[in-house]
Image 1: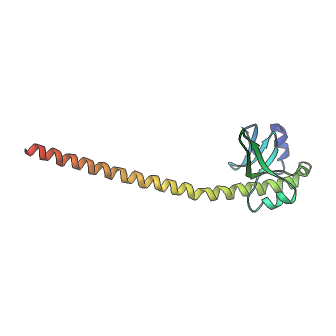
Image 2: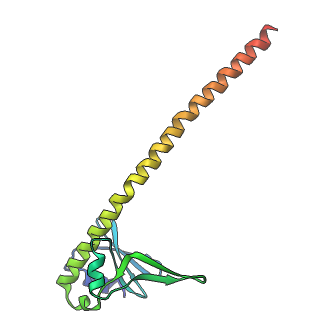
Image 3: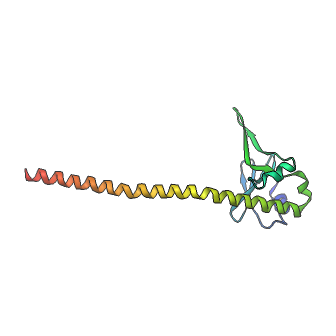
Length: 147
């Protein structure tokens, strides 16, 4: 699949950004990646809401092989082949994939917020430790000066 083909394919969905990724392209809208066009096919973002639709169509999740094992990526599912000929329905599936990607982004956000809060807490504690060390040094210097 080349860039022009993908632009035409998503015409009914609306404007998409297509960028090189792995062995193909990442497809995004509103700054959120929702599809992958790879040698193995076209894969849409999926979650617990949309996976049953893919299963009903007989689709499979994206997978790739390493030397040691086959990795199953359950968050991207192969687009049913029949949708390549139905641009309106493909646009509906694309909107559902974008919604799944947005839900995934919302789920990830709290973890980032927790990490940021933890970093701030550590940053606040460090100056206090430095202040204690500085005051201890001053006390030590003052004791030596009085001797």
